[in-house]
Image (cartoon, rainbow, N blue to C red; front, side):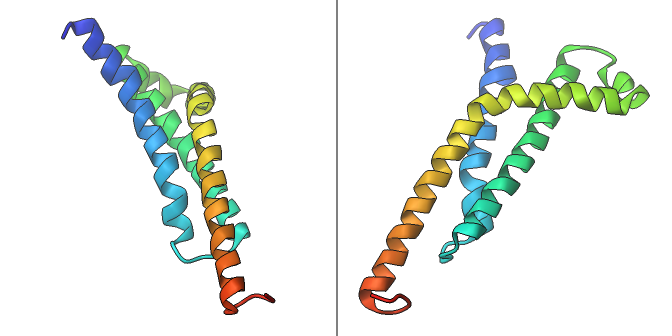
Length: 128
């Protein structure tokens, strides 16, 4: 494996895979397995988006610091300005994990509706 390919793997692919894994896992963990509330699911997806955005900014900061010297000193010298810069980089990451999060939300909402329907058929908690 060449050095350029290794840097591409570590600097691009693995961080993006990690962010996508985070947005695929976190909503299910936050909402729990047995909930039947769409509101709780929406909150979990919102919290996941905020967490992924913040983690993406942290990943961007770490990647920039690994490639460029003096990044930490510049962040400490002007934290608000630098935070805005890295949140902007995180928005670029969101172009990949955003559709993944939307798909996870759709699948979890459909599964929740299926369980609600099954409860209604069984006569446990619905009008059916």
